[in-house]
Length: 407
View 1 (cartoon, rainbow, N blue to C red):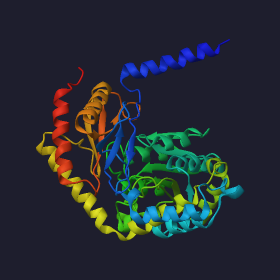
View 2 (view 1 turned 90 degrees about the vertical axis):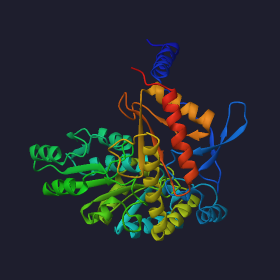
View 3 (view 1 turned 45 degrees about the vertical axis):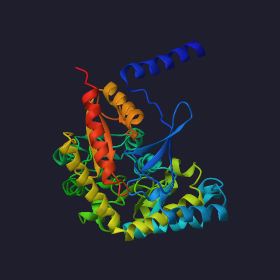
View 4 (view 1 turned 60 degrees about the vertical axis):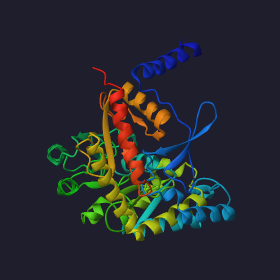
C-alpha cells in the first residue's frame, strides 16, 4: 500500500523533472495599474516595486482599464454586492447577467447566448453537454485546439477524430469514413494563439456542412479585434450563419473575465440544461457582468482601436525585422510568436528581460507547445508606444545573442 510519503515522493519527483527540463512554472508578481497599462509594478523578492512593461497580456485592446468599464463595475458592486450568491439555478441569476447575455446575442446576431465564469469552462462544459444531448456523437477536432476543448472532447466515450491542423482535406476523409447516420460535431478555433495563424474557415465549414455536421467555433482570440463591430473571423468572412455555436471569452479583448457560447435558441437552451460545468458552478458576479457588457458596447463602436491594433502589430513586425528578430512565419494576426528554442533558453531569456530590462514576457514551454519550440508570444496593444516597441526589439536581440540555444 502506498503511504502519504510515497505519494509525496512521486509528486516531488515529477516537479523536479519539470525543473530539470526548464518547464517548471514560476509566477512573477506583476501588479497591473489602472490607467497605466502596459506599465505594471513588479514585486521583487526583496519586496521592492519596479516598473515593467507587459508584452504578453491577453488584454488585447486595453479594455481592462477603460474608465467606463471600471465605473460600471464599481456601480454594480455597490448596488449588488461582491458575489452572485450561488449558481444560476440556486440564486445567481440577476439583471446584469441577463443583460450581458442579451448584449452578446445582439452583438453576434444569434438568437441566444449563455455566459460562464471562465472561457475554459464555456468550452469544456458546452462540449460535454453536447456529448450528453446527442447520443453516439462523433467529434472531429483540430489537433491544435486549446486545452479546454481537448478536455471536453476527452469526456466522450464515443468516436473521436483528430484532424491535422487546418487540413480540410484530412477532415473530409475522416468525415467520409464515419458512420453516415451518427450525429457529427466539428470543433476548431478561428485564431490559434500559439502560432498566430487563422483557420481556413471557409474550406472547413464547407466540408463540415457537406456532411451535416454541427460546427463549434472558438473565437476567443478573434472576438473584439476582427470583423464588423469586432464580431470575429467568421463575421469578417461572411460565414457567421454557417457556425452553429460561437464560443468566446470575456477575458481577452473584452478585458474582464468569463466565457460564453452563442447560437440558436434551442441549442443554447439544451446546453444550459445539460452542462454540468454551468449547472453546478457559482455564477459570474453582477459587477463582472456589468463591466463586460459595458466593454462590449464600447468595442462594438470603437473601430479606431481595431485599426490601431493592426497598425501597431505591423509596425512591431517591421521593428523586429530591423533588429534581426524573426516572427514565426505562421503568424498572420496580432499574435507575434518569437521562436526561442529550448525551454532552458526561453526561461532564462525571460528572466534576464524582466530583471535587467524591465520587460515582462512569459516563456511558453512544453507541453503548451512542442518540445524544442519554446517561444515568446508577443502581444502589442493600442496602448504601447513606439519607444516601448523599439526598446523591446533591441533588448530582445541583445538577450537572444547573450543566451545561446542548446545543441
